[in-house]
Length: 401
Image 1 (spheres, rainbow, N blue to C red):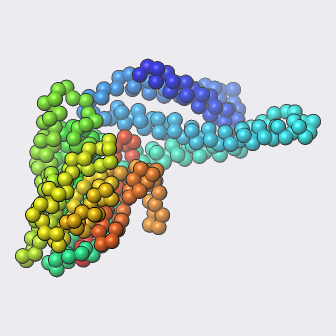
Image 2: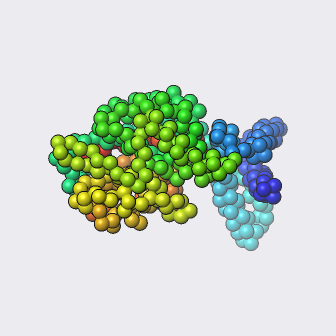
């Protein structure tokens, strides 16, 4: 651990020394060293303190979020500045080599103030975007309307409205009141059914306790159902004993029940209208390793007619290509989450990009395979980076036709 910290400090020292070259090129005052290095040293002292005092078993994530935010705001942008400097240095090196051979000018080219200014400005813009994502971005919940025609949908369910939310990660929020607008936005849709597709907490069931009253406010004519996501199993937590870990899932299920959500664990429920049926399936997490594969679609579809219209809740979208789309019970619509859109990217109507696409090709929005659909929700909350840049928190609204 100590060796890793020392190595990282060495890397960061090289980075800071390099970026300082741009700073002193733009800001040539005699106080340039003090203005740059005093805040820098204080920031790294705080980060070292945060690492030393980090308690993995803590159920509070604020200290971790602050430290991670400091890295993203003050360190990450400097990598971008360093890229500008590196490109300039390569050009300077080539020019020096050419002049040394072809001319009598053997002086090494000096840095151009403009390049340093552009690099520092770009870094400042990135830092501003990260800060905006923390303060405002994670609260910019957006309702996305999706109109779908599902195979074998009974006539009584034409116009049926389903709201999907996913990846709340309640432990990442300190004040439930700041999410009141999102709950109001859900109720504004007047859903017939609300489906939650996993990761209500980061690790521990008690993270959701302060949010029970808030999520109890969500209203739906035919109820609210939920499934477990990879974080809900507590596999990333630090447990005092085996009993605490063993009791975590039952506690979480009970807490969600208090908020009005019925947990489906490889099982199904039937919504009936005028004698016609819509089947709601819910499986436990099924993901590509190292993520757990507890989901059992065979069990969830037991006694469900193959020709019936079915909607599946499955946290991880990789389940769709691996199993769901070729399953003999013919699941018309799968609802997933998990990716968060990495909480960072470009999310426009006709162009979408996020680094997470290289891990999950189906990372956000609607995908179709024959007459079967997968929808990947961008997530309600945050994990790790306590903000969102470009990819906003989502409330999915499905209107069936």
